Length: 181
Image (cartoon, rainbow, N blue to C red; front, side, top):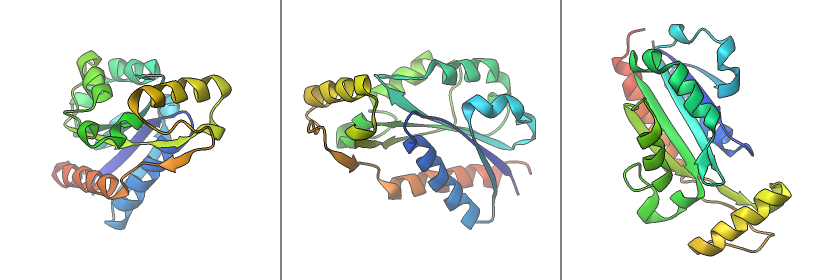
């Protein structure tokens, strides 16, 4: 059975939570799955994984430069095997912006990335003002004001569609079914 690696980059833990959900779903089907922050990937033997999935959160309107740096460094390896990418962002809470084709952050990421993943997902994140650093709290509040989202600084809401995450995990599993072990 194909060995799957889930790499993630997030700020406040929700991208990791999405990865954990994908991992749990894949494990229920008997797959071998490992998970790590993208910053720890240099300590892994990336070649031994049949599939690599990268998940990244948006912070202040951008994916981390560390994600693109990893992709540039490992572009050949990523392109040599089944692969996937997903983004976690609050804009995806809107029905008109919750697909890879309609989400502005995913579209911008793919336009900048030298790697074009075989499978792309986008998931709405969570909004928890009290958990954010002070500057992030007010930047996100301003963005929410501009986009018609919740602005009360005591708001704590999870917009993630977990069924959508499970479907994505199923699609990763389908990639695994076609990957060499």
